[in-house]
Length: 397
Image (cartoon, rainbow, N blue to C red):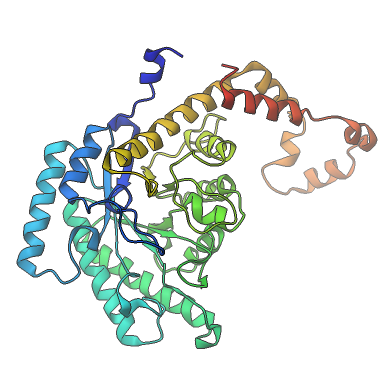
């Protein structure tokens, strides 16, 4: 590949790539060791992200403003941050609330048994929503990292779901009353840091949303690592959200199945899964593409210094663009098209779509299907999958 071709994968703001302050700002701390990198100033992070072609920066409230900051300190920090965002041409597409770090949330936030905890969680979230609105964010994500249990006898899960429902209904009302024009995106995870987290998958979240008072303004924020941790196909979960018009935001990273939440560089694990995901998001197969932010919720390896952090961030974005190019080429391939088209039968389409009628039922009952001939026919999926692999490996273009 020529240098020109390689440079074509460099990110630009038009790609709508975003990172959280907590992602590139992660200092490499883990449960077994302290930080290995200095804490970076949020304004420095914004400038560096802009320099490598990112479009947006996202944040938890306490990524920017210390938990115990005074009102004057808060205003100074926000003013400086807004100026940096404006000066760099960046945007803040999404904000969220840290409802998991402080010890008060040890038994959950919106689902905690103690009413004082639930009240404080609502108070903190309203204040953080105000911050998001001030920064121009139109998407607000909720990850219930502490909304779960180890000792299941502590509460009826139905009570937890009802408390979560009441919190979402209340906060939707708050946003509507303030005319912020925000949408909420709920993020599922099966476990960690709790033994079990309520509403553990995107499918659970989609059903939960259908029970809300303002379900029209609530969608999902699926994360690669969270679904893969549960052994699920991330592309299938995202497809379900897209089909429901509920994919409001997405968290991209890498994950080895069966491990703790790793938040690896996007595309560094399961390249086939990443390819199928990008193919889905970009709509190269023909479906409606996703038009929201491509957010990378990932961290650089603990082995890295700050220079390695920016290599990590560039790698996330370049890999996405490489996979998008590969997906487009794959779906434009004549042989691929033929293999997929061979499964189509336009004459049967009127009977198989558009719902029930008496006439369709009669026609289907009278249909003469040679089941032995259909059953004996090879579908060519081995060849189709091999073509996918060859596009991934770069030997076919």
